[in-house]
Length: 224
Ligand code: DX5
Ligand code: ZN
Image (cartoon, rainbow, N blue to C red; front, side, top):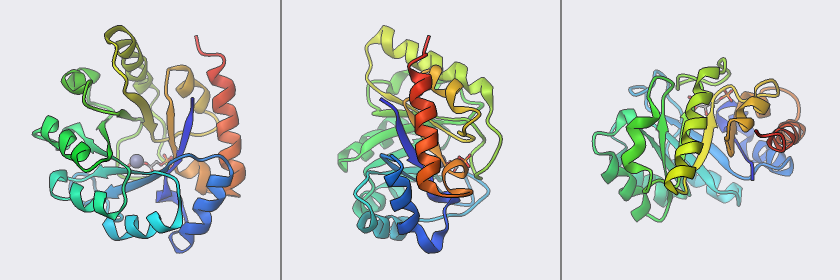
Protein backbone atom coordinates (compact mmCIF):
# COMPACT_ATOMS: atom_id res chain seq x y z
CA UNK A 1 0.00 0.00 0.00
CA UNK A 2 1.58 3.27 -1.16
CA UNK A 3 0.46 6.63 0.24
CA UNK A 4 1.23 9.96 -1.36
CA UNK A 5 1.63 12.90 1.03
CA UNK A 6 1.98 16.13 -0.96
CA UNK A 7 4.02 18.73 0.90
CA UNK A 8 2.32 22.11 0.92
CA UNK A 9 5.73 23.78 1.19
CA UNK A 10 5.80 23.90 -2.62
CA UNK A 11 2.14 24.97 -3.00
CA UNK A 12 0.76 28.43 -3.65
CA UNK A 13 -0.01 29.56 -0.09
CA UNK A 14 -2.66 31.99 -1.31
CA UNK A 15 -4.62 29.03 -2.75
CA UNK A 16 -3.87 26.20 -0.38
CA UNK A 17 -7.38 24.75 -0.24
CA UNK A 18 -7.65 24.57 -4.05
CA UNK A 19 -4.20 23.10 -4.45
CA UNK A 20 -4.89 20.45 -1.80
CA UNK A 21 -8.20 19.66 -3.46
CA UNK A 22 -6.49 19.06 -6.82
CA UNK A 23 -3.83 16.85 -5.25
CA UNK A 24 -6.54 14.90 -3.41
CA UNK A 25 -8.37 14.29 -6.67
CA UNK A 26 -5.09 12.94 -8.00
CA UNK A 27 -4.95 10.31 -5.23
CA UNK A 28 -3.14 11.99 -2.33
CA UNK A 29 -4.05 10.31 0.95
CA UNK A 30 -2.24 12.52 3.49
CA UNK A 31 -1.23 16.19 3.55
CA UNK A 32 2.35 16.84 4.64
CA UNK A 33 2.92 20.07 6.58
CA UNK A 34 6.53 21.20 7.00
CA UNK A 35 7.04 23.16 10.21
CA UNK A 36 10.38 24.99 10.45
CA UNK A 37 11.60 27.23 13.25
CA UNK A 38 14.68 29.00 11.85
CA UNK A 39 16.84 27.22 14.48
CA UNK A 40 16.78 23.48 13.87
CA UNK A 41 16.71 24.29 10.15
CA UNK A 42 17.67 27.57 8.48
CA UNK A 43 14.16 28.43 7.32
CA UNK A 44 10.80 29.52 8.71
CA UNK A 45 7.40 28.21 7.64
CA UNK A 46 4.06 27.71 9.34
CA UNK A 47 2.65 26.87 12.76
CA UNK A 48 -0.58 25.77 14.48
CA UNK A 49 -2.84 28.54 13.02
CA UNK A 50 -2.22 27.23 9.50
CA UNK A 51 -2.83 23.65 10.67
CA UNK A 52 -6.12 24.82 12.17
CA UNK A 53 -7.21 26.35 8.86
CA UNK A 54 -6.09 23.30 6.87
CA UNK A 55 -8.12 21.09 9.21
CA UNK A 56 -11.26 22.83 7.92
CA UNK A 57 -10.13 22.66 4.28
CA UNK A 58 -9.46 18.91 3.92
CA UNK A 59 -10.65 15.58 5.29
CA UNK A 60 -7.26 13.97 4.72
CA UNK A 61 -5.03 13.35 7.74
CA UNK A 62 -2.51 16.14 8.36
CA UNK A 63 1.04 14.80 8.61
CA UNK A 64 2.96 17.47 10.53
CA UNK A 65 6.73 17.23 10.18
CA UNK A 66 8.25 19.27 13.00
CA UNK A 67 11.69 20.57 12.06
CA UNK A 68 11.94 22.48 15.31
CA UNK A 69 13.90 22.52 18.51
CA UNK A 70 12.12 21.73 21.75
CA UNK A 71 9.12 20.07 20.04
CA UNK A 72 7.55 19.06 23.40
CA UNK A 73 6.61 22.69 23.91
CA UNK A 74 4.49 22.79 20.74
CA UNK A 75 3.12 19.24 20.32
CA UNK A 76 -0.08 19.93 22.36
CA UNK A 77 -0.82 23.01 20.26
CA UNK A 78 -0.36 21.15 16.98
CA UNK A 79 -2.59 18.32 18.19
CA UNK A 80 -5.22 20.80 19.33
CA UNK A 81 -5.06 22.54 15.93
CA UNK A 82 -5.92 19.26 14.18
CA UNK A 83 -2.66 17.46 13.40
CA UNK A 84 -3.29 13.71 12.96
CA UNK A 85 0.28 12.56 12.50
CA UNK A 86 3.19 14.32 14.22
CA UNK A 87 6.84 13.54 13.59
CA UNK A 88 9.88 14.88 15.43
CA UNK A 89 13.55 14.73 14.54
CA UNK A 90 15.74 12.28 16.42
CA UNK A 91 18.45 14.97 16.31
CA UNK A 92 16.20 17.51 18.08
CA UNK A 93 15.00 15.27 20.92
CA UNK A 94 17.03 14.77 24.06
CA UNK A 95 14.28 12.56 25.52
CA UNK A 96 12.89 10.90 22.44
CA UNK A 97 10.93 8.21 24.29
CA UNK A 98 9.10 10.86 26.31
CA UNK A 99 8.40 13.02 23.25
CA UNK A 100 6.96 10.11 21.25
CA UNK A 101 4.70 9.17 24.16
CA UNK A 102 3.62 12.81 24.43
CA UNK A 103 2.50 12.71 20.78
CA UNK A 104 0.56 9.49 21.40
CA UNK A 105 -1.03 10.89 24.54
CA UNK A 106 -2.69 13.49 22.33
CA UNK A 107 -4.21 10.78 20.15
CA UNK A 108 -1.88 11.38 17.19
CA UNK A 109 0.22 8.92 15.19
CA UNK A 110 3.78 9.36 16.36
CA UNK A 111 6.70 9.50 13.96
CA UNK A 112 10.43 9.96 14.21
CA UNK A 113 12.59 11.50 11.49
CA UNK A 114 16.27 10.91 10.71
CA UNK A 115 18.47 13.28 8.73
CA UNK A 116 20.67 11.87 5.95
CA UNK A 117 23.67 11.64 8.31
CA UNK A 118 21.78 9.91 11.14
CA UNK A 119 21.93 6.09 11.22
CA UNK A 120 18.94 3.79 11.64
CA UNK A 121 20.61 2.29 14.73
CA UNK A 122 19.78 5.46 16.71
CA UNK A 123 16.12 4.38 16.57
CA UNK A 124 16.23 0.73 17.65
CA UNK A 125 14.98 1.54 21.16
CA UNK A 126 11.87 3.33 19.85
CA UNK A 127 10.90 0.86 17.11
CA UNK A 128 8.05 -0.45 19.25
CA UNK A 129 6.72 3.04 20.08
CA UNK A 130 6.57 4.76 16.69
CA UNK A 131 3.82 4.44 14.13
CA UNK A 132 6.10 5.62 11.33
CA UNK A 133 9.72 6.42 10.58
CA UNK A 134 10.54 9.25 8.18
CA UNK A 135 13.84 8.96 6.33
CA UNK A 136 15.05 12.34 5.05
CA UNK A 137 16.40 12.04 1.53
CA UNK A 138 17.63 15.66 1.53
CA UNK A 139 18.98 17.79 4.34
CA UNK A 140 15.85 19.39 5.80
CA UNK A 141 15.03 23.06 5.40
CA UNK A 142 14.10 23.59 1.77
CA UNK A 143 12.03 22.10 -1.03
CA UNK A 144 13.24 21.17 -4.52
CA UNK A 145 16.63 19.79 -3.47
CA UNK A 146 18.43 16.88 -5.07
CA UNK A 147 17.58 13.38 -3.85
CA UNK A 148 20.38 11.60 -1.93
CA UNK A 149 20.30 7.97 -3.19
CA UNK A 150 22.48 6.59 -0.36
CA UNK A 151 19.58 6.93 2.10
CA UNK A 152 17.82 4.03 0.36
CA UNK A 153 20.12 1.68 2.26
CA UNK A 154 18.44 2.95 5.43
CA UNK A 155 15.00 2.25 3.99
CA UNK A 156 16.07 -1.32 3.17
CA UNK A 157 17.52 -1.74 6.64
CA UNK A 158 14.33 -0.45 8.30
CA UNK A 159 12.21 -2.84 6.22
CA UNK A 160 14.48 -5.79 7.07
CA UNK A 161 14.61 -4.98 10.79
CA UNK A 162 10.84 -4.64 10.90
CA UNK A 163 10.41 -8.05 9.31
CA UNK A 164 12.98 -9.83 11.50
CA UNK A 165 11.94 -8.19 14.77
CA UNK A 166 8.19 -8.11 14.15
CA UNK A 167 7.59 -4.36 14.42
CA UNK A 168 4.80 -2.51 12.66
CA UNK A 169 6.09 1.00 11.87
CA UNK A 170 5.53 2.34 8.38
CA UNK A 171 8.36 3.83 6.32
CA UNK A 172 8.09 7.34 4.86
CA UNK A 173 10.57 9.28 2.73
CA UNK A 174 10.90 13.03 2.25
CA UNK A 175 12.94 15.07 -0.22
CA UNK A 176 13.50 14.86 -3.96
CA UNK A 177 10.70 12.37 -4.61
CA UNK A 178 9.96 12.77 -8.33
CA UNK A 179 9.23 10.81 -11.49
CA UNK A 180 12.90 9.91 -11.94
CA UNK A 181 13.50 8.75 -8.35
CA UNK A 182 10.21 7.22 -7.25
CA UNK A 183 10.73 3.71 -8.67
CA UNK A 184 13.98 3.12 -6.74
CA UNK A 185 12.41 4.65 -3.61
CA UNK A 186 9.45 2.30 -3.68
CA UNK A 187 11.52 -0.77 -4.59
CA UNK A 188 13.67 -0.14 -1.52
CA UNK A 189 10.56 -0.54 0.65
CA UNK A 190 9.15 2.98 1.13
CA UNK A 191 5.40 3.07 1.73
CA UNK A 192 4.66 6.78 2.24
CA UNK A 193 5.96 9.29 -0.29
CA UNK A 194 6.25 12.97 0.58
CA UNK A 195 6.47 15.14 -2.54
CA UNK A 196 6.47 18.92 -2.73
CA UNK A 197 7.96 20.19 -5.95
CA UNK A 198 6.88 17.14 -7.97
CA UNK A 199 3.21 17.75 -7.08
CA UNK A 200 2.93 21.53 -6.73
CA UNK A 201 5.99 22.92 -8.52
CA UNK A 202 4.55 23.01 -12.03
CA UNK A 203 1.38 22.18 -13.95
CA UNK A 204 -1.69 20.59 -12.41
CA UNK A 205 -1.33 18.99 -8.94
CA UNK A 206 -4.00 16.43 -9.82
CA UNK A 207 -2.15 15.16 -12.88
CA UNK A 208 1.20 15.29 -11.11
CA UNK A 209 -0.11 13.28 -8.15
CA UNK A 210 -1.72 10.72 -10.45
CA UNK A 211 1.45 10.26 -12.50
CA UNK A 212 3.63 9.89 -9.42
CA UNK A 213 1.31 7.35 -7.82
CA UNK A 214 1.04 5.37 -11.01
CA UNK A 215 4.83 5.19 -11.30
CA UNK A 216 5.07 4.24 -7.61
CA UNK A 217 2.47 1.51 -7.81
CA UNK A 218 3.93 -0.10 -10.89
CA UNK A 219 7.39 -0.05 -9.28
CA UNK A 220 6.01 -1.67 -6.11
CA UNK A 221 4.87 -4.64 -8.18
CA UNK A 222 8.50 -5.11 -9.24
CA UNK A 223 9.90 -5.01 -5.71
CA UNK A 224 12.66 -7.59 -5.26
C1 DX5 B 1 12.31 19.58 3.41
C2 DX5 B 1 10.88 19.21 3.70
C3 DX5 B 1 10.21 18.50 2.60
C4 DX5 B 1 10.08 19.27 1.32
C5 DX5 B 1 10.19 18.29 0.20
O1 DX5 B 1 12.91 20.03 4.56
O2 DX5 B 1 10.80 18.38 4.84
O3 DX5 B 1 8.94 18.00 3.00
O4 DX5 B 1 8.88 19.97 1.20
O5 DX5 B 1 10.22 18.98 -0.97
P1 DX5 B 1 10.57 18.32 -2.37
O6 DX5 B 1 9.60 17.20 -2.60
O7 DX5 B 1 10.38 19.46 -3.33
O8 DX5 B 1 11.99 17.83 -2.30
ZN1 ZN C 1 8.82 17.32 5.29
